[in-house]
Picture 1 (spheres, protein in one colour):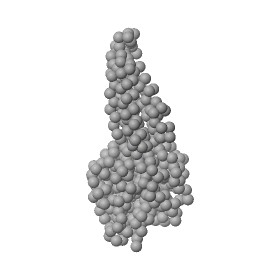
Picture 2: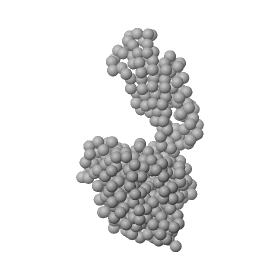
Picture 3: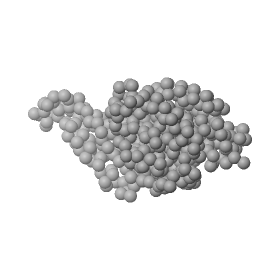
Picture 4: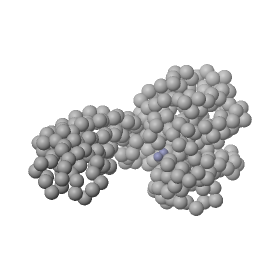
Length: 388
Ligand SMILES: [Zn+2]
Ligand SMILES: [Zn+2]
């Protein structure tokens, strides 16, 4: 089976939804227009239950199969939010809101899951129940965590969860997945170095926080290069340095730094947090300053359950001759991880072709990928819950 014929027929309609979402990007939990349209469409498809306001602005649409919802319950998830980026694609349906843009393709994910919902509500060629999960705030707000915390998985008895993300650099119509860790845990830290400011020509009367901070930045590089097993993945990046001096001749009293830590295993994550605090505090102490670390855990590691990875890959192979089941893990993070921490499931990449990378102002979701993605969602339900 290649893509389902029905999705070739529905392509213009699904593309129109996608482009409408693209024109009207919304950030984080503020996805009111998108969520309202998703809910309205799901109701128009005849979904058995459509509930808004899950995890603040998430939408859940339930479709019962032939046996009226007895049997397995499968969750299919898409994300709805955009990014604070000024679009530079030049497409006719470009964002109408300056500074906001669907630069991660969540417009495509939402449209494809809507397409699958329409098809599944028409055909109901499965046993059990499909729970379509449309989440807000994937880009940093933890919308997936909020929906889980709202009891979504228990409320509808979801037993397995499946998610998808488009990926530039992989040809359209190709899929890529791997068992185990697929995306990293993303933590953030803030470091505040306090010394003694003063005249730049009298450094001996000051504790120069700029010099201390520079030593800290260099020393933090030893976490990846000297502390963590070289066979494990780790990223420690200091991304922001801000001093309270704006003058060329004033040594700042305080320097603040912000950055991110990416890891693939809980043990490594714990170790990096400990080493980061030790290095920062120890380096500051050695140079006569004080430093505080505020370390905040973000999205956990996205871990594909081996068995469910097989199911997801098997479905992808029905659709495409090109399914890579050993794609390298990425150090980006994904808040579908909160759902995968609660239920077995898998997360798969769908090729977006030779486009700009996600989060780039020239990125655009490729509508040619829609039939593949929509078929994968629908087929996941039909394959995991075959009608008797
Ligand atoms: Zn993104
Ligand atoms: Zn994304």
